[in-house]
Amino acid sequence: MEECIFCKIVRGEIPCFKIFEDERVLAFADINPITAGHTLVIPKKHAENLWEIPPEDFSAVQLAGKRIADALKKVLAPVGIACLQLNGRGVNQVVMHYHLHLIPRSGQEPPLPVSSWELKTGDMGAIGRLSERIAAAVG
Image 1: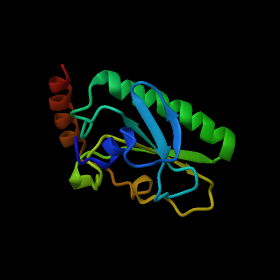
Image 2: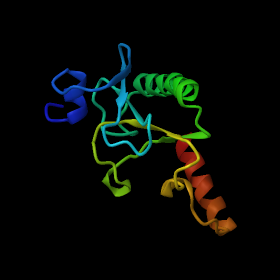
Image 3: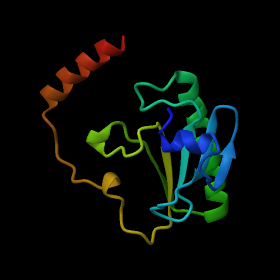
């Protein structure tokens, strides 16, 4: 993608604080971090979202994410790490290039809104029917 900011970073047209790179993946510090150590892991080949990313690039991003999470644990000793990945503008994906956020948490920050919600018991019949439809679509 010619105008994609993450593609420009991959091509070296925009600088980044590189954390990891291999033939399929680039990981770099988020310049608008939620917490210290907030890292973005992206496929080098452009894919807009989870529906478009080839399985081999998806796997490479996840494996790199695990490796980087281990490094974040070693360096920052977080109490936890949020692995956040958004797909589509409807869930506030801003950069339309698949990316995994690794957000270490020290315990001093307020909860991430996406990781803290009110639990409400669902309609078990509706959940069951929808689960059957989804399972059938998975094959």
